Length: 397
Image: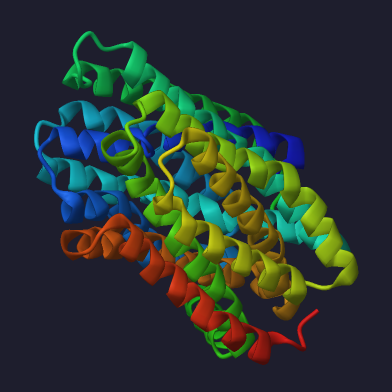
């Protein structure tokens, strides 16, 4: 076992807090400050997730072979180092490059940490994965409003200045360093993964694990639905702050609070839904969550009131909890224990395809359409694929 759940939770909390400070609402507002338009803002927000598309599956599969410890520490190093590189940013293009590199943090750490929990959870995977996820994403809950607060109350002009963006990234870096230090202290224990005896055996094991996991359509479809749901999450991360400030007339702090309220509703309900899916089944919980996300997401651009936007955010957050509490557990149910890393890597890769495509697709849609029509298109995509999921995975646990 690599450490314990409390140590993993503390590492995850600090790492996610660091990453959230660097992301929403600070990142899209920073890109806008640098002169980026809607499509460019969406690309800047989504590009870090593109990293996960290419590297989550290899990271998870590699951890099945060489062990979780080294791969997890590599991710924590990225969390610690990359926030300080934002201090070099003077133009949009460098921001995009740094965002892509920063994406290695979650690309490496994400699937490996989930595989560790799956290793030690036994029959309570849904509940354990949900508790782990809820505790660590509290960092997301705190990060968004804290970032918005620092920008709004630290400024002396009508818009944030460059130094105020830099201050947020310095704090992000300090949190990342703390996460790494805790990781170095708590990851000094015996690995659960049986290492390969040679390079040839390692390569064969790597390829076999990927082939076995990728050949199961239930894994791919379940991961795909999580990806579609996460497409909407990515769109909100990129454009909810812009919509709130530019269209609804709210301030940066309120924009951060709206994101925080959504995350809070996810955190509060996720462990309960994970436990419920352990007992009554994953598919109904996931289906209901997808419906809640689609409806609330499509309703958001119809509101300008802070409280109505908050209500829509709460419903979306609840739907997200329904989906995410059960989808990773369903993938783990389907896969053999020796391939948990590969399974979580596959899950994370498809998850990130959705997360990356949300901001990018929404940015291009906003060039031509209104917020309302752009959000409706994404909501419609999610609704269309729900029957595909139910029909193909209905026999899952």
